Amino acid sequence: MPDLTGAAWRKSTRSNNGGDCVEVADNLSGVVGLRDSKDPAGPALRFAPDAWAAFVAGVKNGSPTS
Image (cartoon, rainbow, N blue to C red; front, side, top):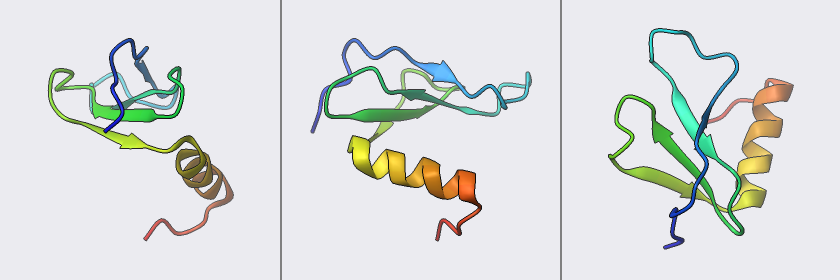
């Protein structure tokens, strides 16, 4: 499993100020991390960069995510 040490986490610019959002770390080679901003020490999901790019493109295009 790819290591997320050194990840630079950021929130979406569309997140609300209530803290109900996720953070993404896309500064590492070979892995994109995703975590709950309310639990930064908790578990994080890991995605291959190409899988993450396909997901983001689908969201931007309005494609279903199921």
